[in-house]
Image (cartoon, rainbow, N blue to C red; front, side, top):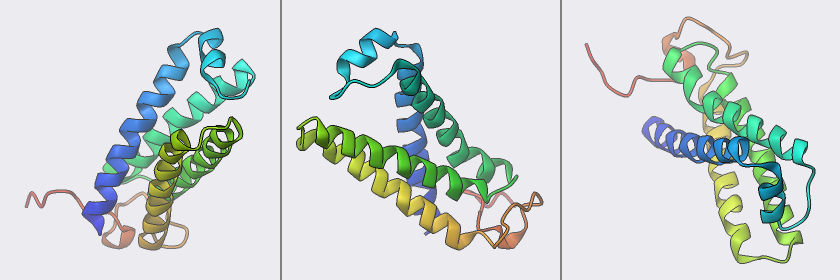
Length: 141
């Protein structure tokens, strides 16, 4: 299960780093043209920052073994973003394209649930103890 969670976390981090990065560098006028329904430009920038920070929150706490309890919170935040993206796409009349944010949201929910169950209550231990729910990807010693 640990490997599955790490694989999904890595894929989600790449997706959200790309999506958030594109939204950060793209001109606001271009972004608003591509939306199924008009959204304010500053809101789209806020979503971009949240996506990038969420992507970092999926990976860095486990790699650095600092505050692993932040990973399920980051995943839960990304679930909220994907629920909004799915609803917005459906409201625009596009059923097919709404499947992508739905699947990404379900994967983020899998990570949130999996890491929440594997992280102890108050899982903000910085020591990276054995019961933190994170195991290294390789057993170097």
